[in-house]
Length: 111
Image: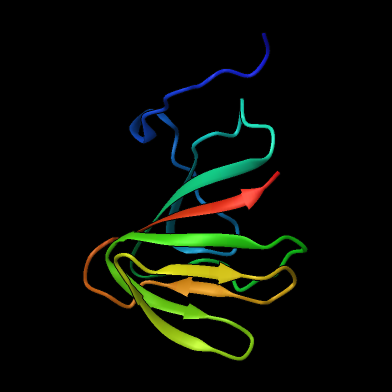
């Protein structure tokens, strides 16, 4: 039958550190089972950040909790709960937690 619906509790997925980041934990929520895209749950502690990097694929980031700053090549913007950040492929970018509590985001990328 192949691919079937799955339900995954993020708390059951191991949180790992990401190279080039600080105070950041990432959980690959659907690393197995999804054919087309991956969903990552990321927690960034105050003063923490993701790597300043780029890659060929576009991706979307949705802010679940907290606040911070999104850095792009030509734009720097404050982000908070309910914001969607759409990053095109090859754009250098970084997310920093500039708030006082944990910044929790979902990041969707193609496989």
